[in-house]
Each structure stands twice: as C-alpha cells, then as structure tokens.
Length: 135
View 1: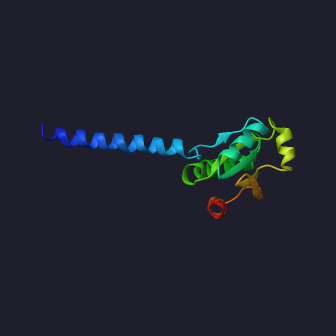
View 2: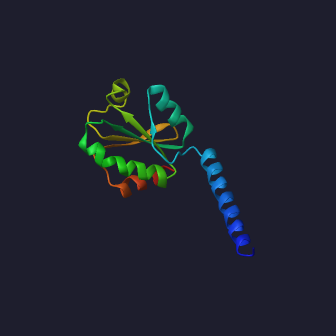
View 3: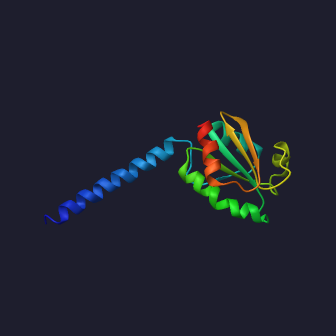
C-alpha cells in the first residue's frame, strides 16, 4: 500500500501540472501549432488577438516552403508569437495585399502592424531573434 500512495501522489501532481499548462495556453494568445488562415478577416483577427504574429505566406507546390514548414512549426511551439500559415493559392487577394511576389514570404506583425518582411527560407535562430525583438 505504501508503494501505491507515492504513485498516486505523483499522478495527482502530474494531472495538476497538465491542467495548469492547458489553462495557461488557453489564456495566452499563442497557440502551440501554426494557425491556418482562411482569408483577410481571419488574418486581421489573428493579428488583432496576438501581440506578435509571424505570417508564413506559402504554397503547397513550393520546395523552399516545405523546408521552412518544420521551422515555423517549431517557432509556434517555442516562442510567444502566434504563427499563421497563409496559402497564397487559396488567398491570392490577401497575398497581393501584402505584396507577396515569391514564396515563402514571412511577415512579422507586432502590435497589429507589419514590422518585418523576409523572403525565402530563413534560419530558425534568426526568426526567433526577430520575434524576441518585438515580443
């Protein structure tokens, strides 16, 4: 019986930790996975709801976009920024609105305004540093 009690205490503590993490992620505006954007209103809402948003304008057929995909997924997990994915083929007007002429194009928003623009595959550390500068 005494062996079971510590296990139950550990389970209870772990349950509390997991529950606490869920509450924190719900209260913060930073999802741990990229958010897929379905139009201009969706992007506007995402940018308005978060302090820092990294918008990845991509295309499914784009090789460099596929190389960048795990990097932006990691940034969504590891930084305070919300990472938004914008499919330029499905959102051509939105891509044009932000002057996207080549993919991938990354636009960093801070306090509702675009503050950085990067074209092509970027290094994770460089992106994390730019996010940190505006967080």
